[in-house]
Length: 127
Image (tube, rainbow, N blue to C red; front, side, top):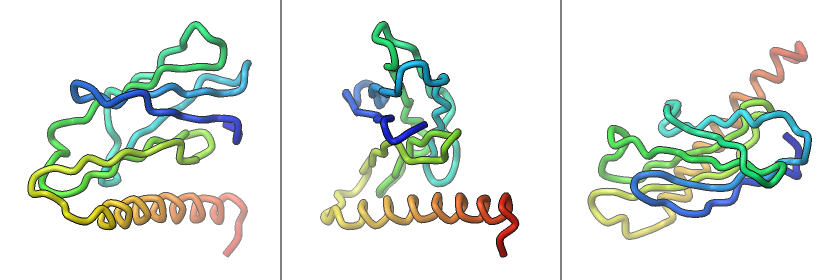
């Protein structure tokens, strides 16, 4: 997907993150993947809306990934391996400093970049 692609959160309700994905008209269907703790989240739905180029995205928040601390969900486009959006769930004991959440988000994004760079090196034959 191109830089014209945006994913905007609309709400978090009843254990589901919801958003609207806007892509250029006539673009192929989006390939959305959500990961938390580097594990894929199942049950993500992407539904075409009436407005051309807009898709409703629903991400379930699986109860099995919730535990004390911070859980970072990364929503990305599989085709371009680009990060479209993210959200953080804080659970259990109160996390007094949001810096911890930011650090975890940066760490998750860095891991994604490392995977993309390694794949790029393999595909281009770079050492």
